[in-house]
Amino acid sequence: MLELEHLTKRFDAILAVDQISLTVPAGEILALVGPNGAGKTTTVRMLSAILKPTAGKARVAGYDTVTQASDVRCNVGLLTESPGLYMRMSGREYLDFFGEIRGLSVSKRGERIHDLADWFHMSESLDRRLGEYSRGMKQKIALVRALLHEPPVLLLDEPTSTLDPMGARLVRDTILQLRDGQRAIVICTHNLPEAEELADRIAIIRRGRIVELGTPAELKTRLLGFPLLEVRFAPSAANGAAAVVSQFASVEGASTGWVHYRAEQPEQVNPLILRALLEADMPVISLQEVPRSLESVYLRVVAEGM
Ligand code: ATP
Image (tube, rainbow, N blue to C red):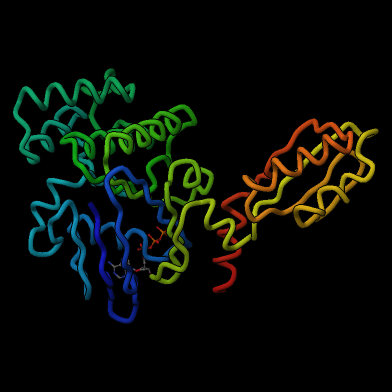
């Protein structure tokens, strides 16, 4: 659905995007994360046919972003960090105007505007002027605009940055539903828990280049090592537990009531460990992975380049 081949953008002396190659199939959310100025917005602007690449190319929904720019625009829903809203128009007039540009009939526009405004709890604000909207309301109306023509590709730059917690939850749930509806979705975000929750794959961009790409689990294993697991027992039963666990995995720490170990293939090792502990009369209270955040991965990758 999205194919980038050595996509590059130079602004005079600044190489903003440096030979990015990747694909995003339908039904996948890719998160672009990276420091300020890394090239995320420039990438999205090239994918939405607003900016021409200096070199390389991109196809969006099968269309070339340079030679078939208007087809690309019809197939993309774009939410930018600072959407150009016409402040004297009402929300309804603005959405109707964009629906018409995207080729929707009068009745289809009315139906979509009604349904989306209802979904995002905006119905009561639709007839107010955009100039009177709060920042969060502006972001939601820009998102409604991006979704109006039901595009197969969504490019969402900081989709929840100005929203209150309930609004952000609603937008995140909507993005997941759209993914399940077989959209290809790219989000740019500095909100790493959000990236981790939403994204099937994460691309970490630094100085215009993708320096890491993978699922959150792959990135954690690659940069932080194999999963760390914690087994807990009743304190009275734990004597010698570390010795039992160490027959199957590498023990990283132990104290009264718990043992930490690392396992390359937990699905194979954990049942063996549990059985051995039970046979040694050490009843297990719980066994779980010690949570590791995407933030630790990100900080490691980004700090490396400082
Ligand atoms: P942020 O997280 O701050 O939004 P970003 O990753 O989206 O950053 P970009 O906006 O893509 O970064 O900027 C990448 C680089 O390109 C920066 O050095 C920026 O100054 C430069 N740049 C972006 N747009 C232009 C422009 N129109 N003219 C000149 N330089 C630009």
